[in-house]
Length: 333
Image (cartoon, rainbow, N blue to C red; front, side, top):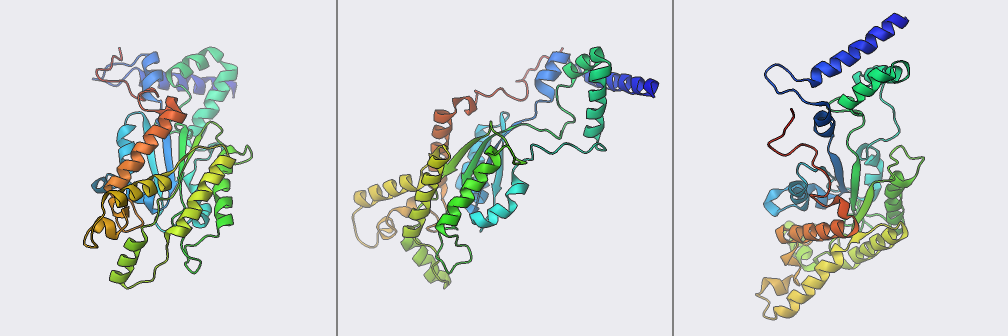
């Protein structure tokens, strides 16, 4: 048995060193370059929300998620986990499929599990070989490992669907809405959570205001009932601010910003009812249908997010995190 384990450990070492030395026709990598570049999986910026997030990957409306993905290219993976139609109660049922598990070990029968078992044995039985192996293959099991890059930032963006009228199937009572937001945060901050990630930063976004006249016009054209109003949306935006303060997390106040800009537009554009900006109270500058962000609204939110991230966590702003892959031309020899 001992002979077998030693042989297996030696095979493990030879496999890694031969792979890292490069294939035929390719320049061999040095141990340091492989450790620095080849297996540093991208860290993650995750946005968890409703249709505001799902639709924000659309380049036709300058979706804020698409803009963030462009901003962080080659530095962090920007993951869109937006679910159109979902309120926080529905999101609470699926959040465990959204956040990465941090406490579940890999299966011992998976390739990663086998490699980890061999590495653990080598570490104790043959420390010289183990140290050399870990220099070549630093804490990464496979190209897509069990333990990928860290989730550096989680953005939570809910409230619009929760704020619908009580008779709507999307409505969530205000107290329950607040409890759901706290629950999302606890999954990352509670040591007993399978998603515990104390180094992950959390950022809230308040829902944008509702353009009541735009919603009324859409309801008239499509002959369906009105289920959302701005006076209700305001209460849920206020609650996002309250919960964010409770859990000591910053927030981007999209609601207040669009409200201020819409008021400014109304003051700056007096006129007749033929003026669309006056008809829709200035909200049409930032909303498509009185609910969802248009191109200008997405650009506004994107710029607010850039400022908030750089202000609260300058280490997360682009060009601050190290690039996961060496810039061209890479010198691997």
